[in-house]
Length: 104
Image (cartoon, rainbow, N blue to C red; front, side, top):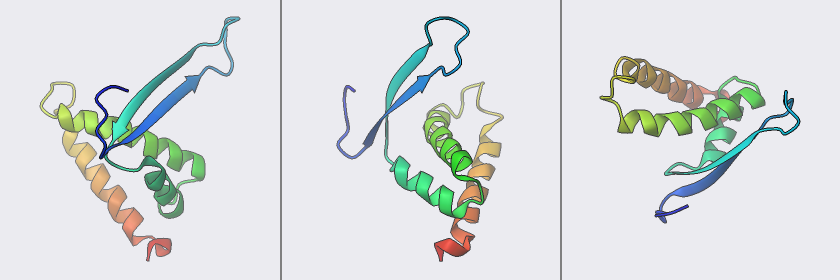
């Protein structure tokens, strides 16, 4: 990863095609930086969101990939109508996780 910020966490995502329709399965890999600790977010979601572990992992990863892009491009025509809904969702999610009995 280039231009690493020492205050950010660095991650690598690898996606592998498990049931390929061709002889050679497709794979892709990318790296990203995040100010948040992705593992802590996922653990917190697993414990406090009410979602099963697989769903909590998927939502944690997807939100940390999508959220910063939305924030950086909030006035972009693709995202402008979605931003208020995303904000409401994030507020509800954070409130739900905070209120969880295991988080007290």
